[in-house]
Length: 493
Image 1 (cartoon, rainbow, N blue to C red):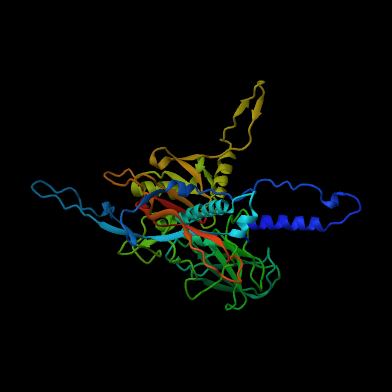
Image 2 (image 1 turned 90 degrees about the vertical axis):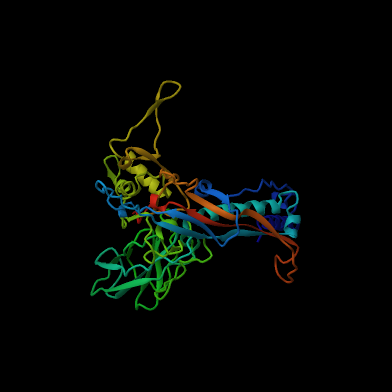
């Protein structure tokens, strides 16, 4: 039901109830009082930091693909520059690679009936409200797709390793099958599916307080792991989802659990996942363009299109996994960021990333580690009367990249990046004649625009009468011209 229509119908229903009231004398129940209708409020947060940072450029040509060419780094394949007197120098080796990013449409539609518009007279403009709220969802969707959109399938995870534990659960002396499948960033938020699944089994010989700890090798590009339980290896029930590649199965189940919601899995889709061991189960979304995470974790084929990791030329971006381990404090900084992002990036491309992108949970972990150490500084500020005032809390806004000689790298919180994954983004590559004005870019065939539909009569259908229907949509592709200068860290516990 349209929001404004619901408000006005509810108001009319209240007036009708007042008309029916009969009292002896005038009491409060008679209803002789006004209705204090305050303004309509909107409770939808619209936080889109990645969309705000990515340059949006209009393509000068119509084409199914945005195409660019790159001179690849083959420094380690160059011959020895020493040639000796009277000899010619060895020829420099060059490697050119074409890249392609397919244009895809994204957007949302809105609808307002004429009757809803009439009933809202004097209170609000449903057309304007519907347009504004639809645009808000378009912006949120853009932010999520720019980070997590993916057209190719994630690799099938390996069979999980199962470890029996005799306490901490309610599993009895039974055979337990554990299945696992993985999700893309888009799949995390929209529940569009997961990868081809894999499974393993173990049998408990005794006990009634058993549990199973399952771990699986990190899947490049996966932001979440869906876990399943089966008593026979044929009928599978959804158990839970984690943002790391490990889980504890503490109970036998005979129906699907609900998707867990809360701070550990913020904004995750509540669509219950399914298990398919025979084929990809929706991790590939042909309607998606390939977003930032896909450009860092997918391989590329001979045409320069992103494909499943392990099926093409290896993506030069740095990728590492903590396999469920937490970040730790080391030497006044976060050791895992230094060792698994900063150092390998410096060794590979001799530059520092522009920013570290992470979910609020990882930003909080870093702040707690740094500010909880003995070396953290406490500032005592005096108020107007000269008294000391201590302000609790703090944040870590940037981290020193010691591998790059002390460059500071800002920390950015991104709501469209699920917990457990951290991305090192580089907005400028300091390579000679790099010729890159925008490392990351949304190349639009048509940028955000509204299209109104003609009205058709649909009898005996609610909403099929006089109405206004519209879409706000874009057609574009995401370009990452320098994955080699970026990194991803997965499965942060």
